[in-house]
Image 1: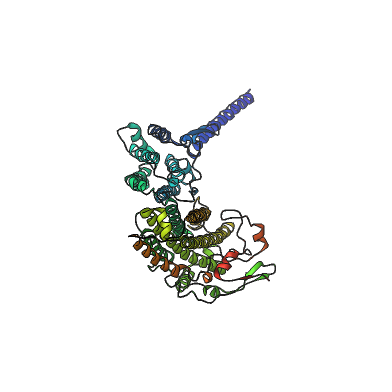
Image 2: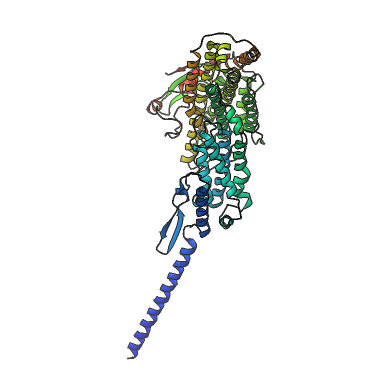
Length: 583
């Protein structure tokens, strides 16, 4: 009996002990689950999404409301998580914009940059959970509207004006604290607090003034719709292309800081920022020159980055020798960098030398030679950008004649042969700009891929984050390249229009304007195109089988950085006045 009692007591103690252990483990699991589970939207977040939906409906703001919807996830059968049905996981992407800018494209670009910069700062604070936050979803919806609607507005119609007004009123409604739901929005992270990172602050202080400014000048936009529409459209396209080139130059080689919100795509005055590098010093000067050209039609004689281009036009032309390199690489460049630099102007060579001193190949995932070629292409894109802005200035000058005397006067005062010559210069500038931006982007992308493949230390230039300076630069370069066919089509339309009229000379008061224009045209020719055949280009090509296999590959297509691959394309050699000679 004693033995049975002992066994019974022992069994009882074991059972009790196991029960206690089980309860303890259960409570511990619950605690760990509650404290360590994936994040979930709070009741305040869900209420905020419902409030935003009501505001959109109330003000008749058209949008896809799926971005405001939530869904529930069962986590380990012990907790229900609430997340967005469509998280904003692609907030780091750059939205595709119209290849020809609308009349509000500058304002649209500023709004997009401000909102993406806000998203980036939130991501830095909370990590990937940012894609589920209501404020990031709202910012993403605004960016999508800016890219798909505001940037593409071609005409100042009453309907488009009403749509922009509704967006401005939506911001006002978000501030109306007489409604309890609006007050409750304050509980949502990053809506009001912290003050330094507040979506309401960005919408109220930055975005709304941009929208209201467009509404205040709407009558001016409407008055611009008259004769010479195609000419002004071409002028606007060239201006936008020059600005996008500035954006490429702003970020494509920048390593000291992330630059999501552009400092150069300004519409209310010449960009003014504190330079942090030699790149910035020259960029600021170039921005001022481009702004001057785009806002003072015909003023192409003011000194810019390449004032001595004509003086250096007779520089020695070099021959590019290309020879087989056995199994180590497909081809090698026979000419030295010094030889290639002889095709540059004096100021271009000086800029190249400064950049070369300030840059290190390992930061860009390139060899010294590869980085030198990339810097050469960067310098050439600077010159191409200025030439493109000068083209825009001349075309805008022509549009003044159309506005004053109509298309008939324009084509009579300036014969169709001259108009064809202007369009030919514009075509050359477009072609060179596309080649420069394309080869620069290809080389930079190879360097970026090399760094990521080697798991090198992350930087603002190349990182595993959703966005970095390289990807910002590639997006801008793609916009430039996608727009070139549209620009070429506009050129063809202008020439077709000119062929319909006979060559005559104008008379009267407007002949003074014609004389002033012809003076600007002469300055333009002397400065940018007198020796175009000897001017350096933006791409170096060494032909190889890899290139042929990947002939369809474009800027954002495949292709990983391989040391043996060639940098650039054959048109680069033609532009420099250099000939490729395969062995």
